Length: 587
Image: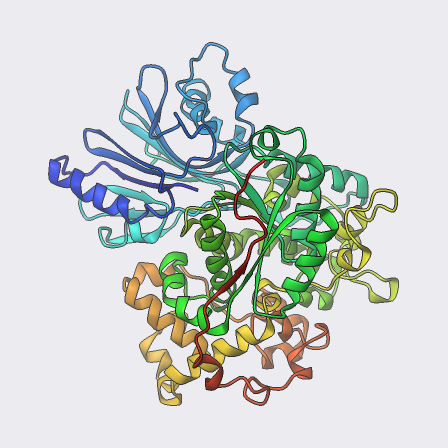
């Protein structure tokens, strides 16, 4: 990931303004610690903080076409850049960077070039010939992007809120799958897949087609000129990513540069479900496995940094972002700059445990559509910003455009959870990789129950967070919550605690409106709560809130206090421990 900042059409083109843009761009330096660039053309500024993944030696930005009339600042990866270069035989490229194709594509195809890009991206392109510009964000919002408007009439674009919140009168999240054109002065959707209308598909399930599509999605993400690895929690999604990567790594350019043995990474509290399962899968696949342990206190100490970097007060996002934030720092310290992760599968296949209660295939499918459309506010936000905080890039093959099209075209009847037929959540994905001759994974891992990341790192993590919040937020504060926070009023002490921290960093009204709200159970949308009358009495985003579904549901465990999770657990502060069998990433 990189960090981009653009100020377009400002009334001040002075040296002082340039200094201010540089100052704000430095707020994004964690995203791109390798190099900085700033281009000014009249009243437009394009700044870039680079994380070098492809062509580290010469791919610095901003990037240009041959005569430098088109300039672009990009955050992302374009996986089909070599194929696109072949479609531009009359163009000369200055670098080997995958993003170098964008300016040249625009020269040939105009705004239509955006739909030709296969990858994750946010970019600002300035055409100096007529001083017009376009801004675009990838299909589902894997990369983060914000747009703002200043009192002088200028438009601001930044990878994170902190790049523009102090200088804009109003700002908001730039919608995924959209393009902004200065010529029309508005947004338009460039990504229009069949599933977006929520029409119920009827394609029969073909496990081999689904398997092939996902393998292709993983393989294309092995494009790298720097050391990389996989995040491996031991759950279905990350384990499949690791298995496919391990199968196809040999023979790739990355293997020739950095060795054919895959590195895998897992984080959790001592004795957590993920650590145990992750180690088992790593042993099965033969990866060099790095296991990071953290304590509840380690996580609590990091909460303020997490909220500053992830820029949200959403409870489930903060719960899951914290261990990922801690793990990313350790991964980067080993010299790794890119990881492949398993986000997106649960949204596409209805993997969250509340999908067990879907009343019919139509509601099941519509809920998956709603979940994919909201990913940019939740899991994509977490994966992007938790890793980018330390200059680490996360790639997510489940959110490959072509794979989503294949998976979302399957008749949802095949995705429905039917316990009496032995079909658990994400059955179509599990079945696609259930190969008796050449097993991808051990059977019990392939059919392991869904565990949300914030639960899988250790159940006492969430219980500890709730106990900590209760020490800082009293009942009187909760009584007045609606008056203090009228927008997205927190309904729990944990939510109130996060909100106080967020408002300290981002006090603007626009900032609080970038965060989603509404009731949720086990990560459901508000609509799906209606599937079970009992859920409205137990609104919590943890998977354990899926009463009657999760093997360790709250109903079987008692409260945090009765489980012995109280203030005493956050008074000792042991250091984070790391077990790393071989720190050097070498061939």
